[in-house]
Length: 508
Image (cartoon, rainbow, N blue to C red; front, side, top):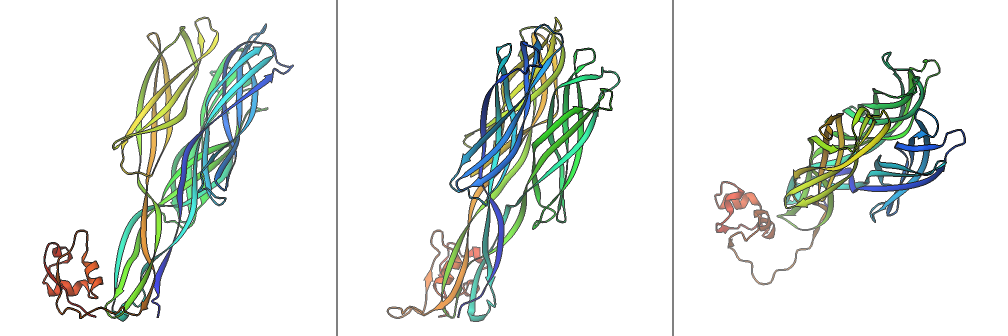
C-alpha cells in the first residue's frame, strides 16, 4: 500500500532579475521653416515614456519614446523659443532563466539631455535614460504537510514549520487621468507653453478584499512664455486614486508599487484666456505583492512496524529577508561661473544606483544631477547643471539579490550662496534583500520488504548521539520512537539526550 500525503500547492513568483539599463539615443534635426534661426541653445529637457515590455526565451525587451523640448534664443528676435523632439528607443537584457510567461516591471527616467547647434538651422540632440527593470517568474510547488491516517502502521512523522515572506503576486493596471492647472492672477497669462515636466509619485496603498487601493500624485511643472514675452513657471500637484484587482492574497500582504509614465500632454485651454493648462496623463501602475506565510512541511517519516521507502522533492524559494527605507537629507554646494539674478526652475534627476559591498556593509550610491534654469545679472536666460553622488549604507549578510530604488521626497530648494548655489533636498532609498532557501519535503511514501540482517540482532543497544545527529535519526535507524527513547532513559525532553549514553529500545 502507498500512504496518502496531504499536499499544499504553493503559488508564488521568483525574482529572476533586478537590474538597471542605460539607453542613449542621438538625433540630427533640421529646424522647421516656421521657427527662427538658433542664436544660442539654453537647455534641453524632457521625459521618457514606456511603450511596451515583453519577455522572451532568455531575454526581456522594452521599448519607449524620448519626448524632449529644446529651449533656445532666436537670432534677430526677442523671447525664448522651443523645439519638440520625439526619439524612439528599444533596449533589452538577457538571462537564461527568463521565459515568455515571466512578468516584467519597469520604470524609465531621463538622466541626461543636451543639444548642440551644428548651424543655425540644424541641431544634434543626445538623450540618456535610466531604466530600472525587474523580471519575475511564476512558480508552483506542492509541499506535503503530513501523512493522512498517519496513526496506522506506527507512522512517525517529522513536521517542521517555515516562516517565509514570498512574492505572492505581480500585477499591473494602465490608467489615464486629466486635470487642469491654473495660472494665478499674480502672474502674466501664457502666450505659449515652452516645456513641461511631469513626475509621478506613489502615495499610500492598501489591500481590501481582492482590491488594491492606491493613491498618488502627478507633480506638474510648466515653463511658459508670458504675454510680456518673458519666461515664467507654474507648478501644481494633481492627486489621483485607483483600484487594482488582486487575487490570492490576504489583506495584511505588503505591496511595492511603481508608476511608469506611458503618455503625457499639456496644452493651453481654448477657454482659459491663457490661464488654464489642461494636463492629460497616461500611467502604468505595477504592484509587487509580498505575503508572510507559515508553511507546514513533512520533512521525513518512517514506521516502527514496517520498512518504508520515501522520496523527496526540493523547493527553492526566494525569501524576503529584509526591506526598509533609509532617508537621506542632502545639502550640496556648487560654484557657478556667473552671478544668478533669478532662479526660474530647478530640478533633480536620479541616475544609476550603484551597489558595493564590504564585509557586512552594503552601500547604494545614487548619481544625482541638479539642473537650473535662471536669469543672469544681464537678465539673459541660462542654464547650469551639477553632478555628484549620494551614498546610503545598510547592514546585510548572505543576500542573493539586493535591490534599491531611490526617490526624491518633498521639494528641492536651491538658493544663492557665497560663490555659487546651495541645494537642499531629501532622498528615500527603498531597499529589499532576498535570499535563496531550499526546503525538502517528502513527496512519496510506501512500504517495502525489509532487508535481511546478517547475524543476530543485539538485545541491548547503548550509544551516544554523534556530532550533528538528532534523536530522530537514531529512532528512525532502530525502528523505535523518540518518546520511547525519552521514557526509557528518563529524559526531561529531546534536548537532554546530548552527551549522554542512551539505551535504545527496538520495536522491530
